Structures are given as structure tokens and as C-alpha cells.
Length: 147
Image (cartoon, helix red, strand yellow):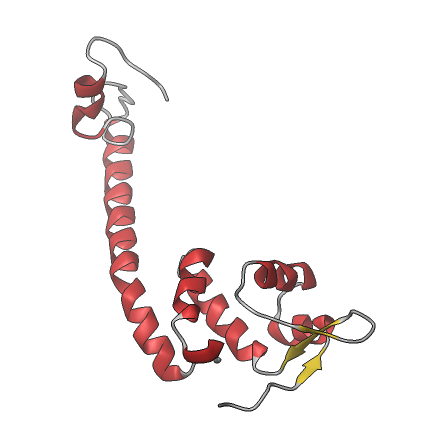
């Protein structure tokens, strides 16, 4: 069994060292991403290992991984341990496919936007941005909708 963590950092210290705000730390704690202990005066204290966990969370958030997925990934680690470099490699590999899909969607959006600007029609019936492949006509024949 691993030794108990040493809860020595105040929220302000963790915020300063991680670049996150104290309310963000509290939010991450409510979301089950990090944990703290309480002093006899009911003040939060974080283990030093929390800084590595926060770095992992920030990297995942930066590439667009939702907090629920980050929490699920962290919950796969034994006894809630702090992620290692190998953990990041394994967990981030799962997110790579999602990220590749988002990149492909953004490229299509960019290309459609360029085509729309060149055409200038902004037609609700044929616009590649508003109505790709005229999907609206299959769902709502006979009318145009702006929503």
C-alpha cells in the first residue's frame, strides 16, 4: 500500500504554482478530479502530488477533453494515484481518435466557409454551412428554417 500523501499545500499555494484560480481548484474537487484534506480549522490542504494531477487535467482540457472523461480516465488509475508519463501516453491515446475527428470536422467547416464566402449566396436551401447536402429538405420539405 502506498504511503499516505502529505497534505501540505494551501489552496492559494496550489493556485499560484498551477496557474489555476482557487475557485477552479474547488470546482475540480467537487467534480472528483482532485482531493484535499481538512485541517482542524476546516481549511483545505492539498498533497504536493495534486500539482502533477492538475498538470494532467490542464493538458487534457487544453485539447478539449470534457471533465467527465478526464475523471473517468483518472478513476482507472490504481488507488487514485497521480498520473505518470506512461499513464498520460495510455490515456491520451484514447483521446487521439476524438481529437482527429474534431480536426477533420474543423477542416471541413473551414473548407465549406471558404466556398460559402466565394459563392456569396447564403441560400438557406443550398448553403453548405447552414444546410449541408440539403438535409433540411429531407426533414422539413417545403419550408426553409433559420434555426
